[in-house]
Image (cartoon, rainbow over all chains, first blue to last red; front, side):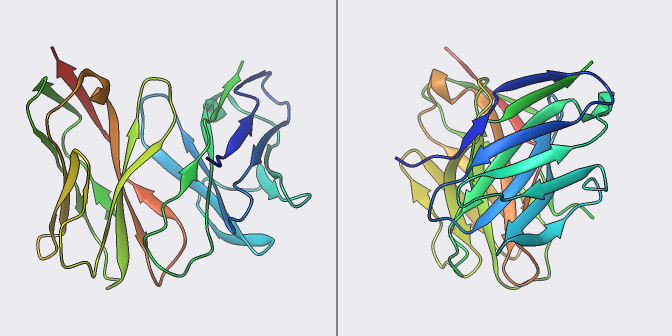
Length: 116
Length: 115
């Protein structure tokens, strides 16, 4: 069964450093997402991406963040100048390009980012 | 206003019993979809069940069913015959048809199944 793949599963970085979280969405999907979940808290929307551009972003997704689809398979989230409060589980998700509502988002296993 | 509200931070249920996890939502979009996800302790998000705003019948998927009350804007998840493996966080989510792509998540309910 196709799945969304995220690497690495755990990333430890020093405050102020840049990190890139990588995702390989399901191959025929057209909508891509990044969400984050601070430990034990709610799942927060960061950004959605469609047709090679950002379609929606939240207030969290400021200039510190960027996304890229560098080739036909990868979807990356870059976090510049990381802060302690960026420590969270980051989920990538994708869904098909259907116009119907009944298409769920398929989530990856997540990358646990720890900023020290 | 919160798009999705889950008022039960934690729930306990006896094995083999049924349990209802509450979810209310807020939208003015007539077209929307409601989703439930399960997050076990390992962290992944597993899709369970979907209910569309125009669906006439409550969704069912194995032991999962959705008690959809459109006028009350509620979409409660019912798990029948609970199993120990059902112990997890459960998130209700919504996507609106005309106003965006994102899925709005609730704060989740932690379910513990007691043997």
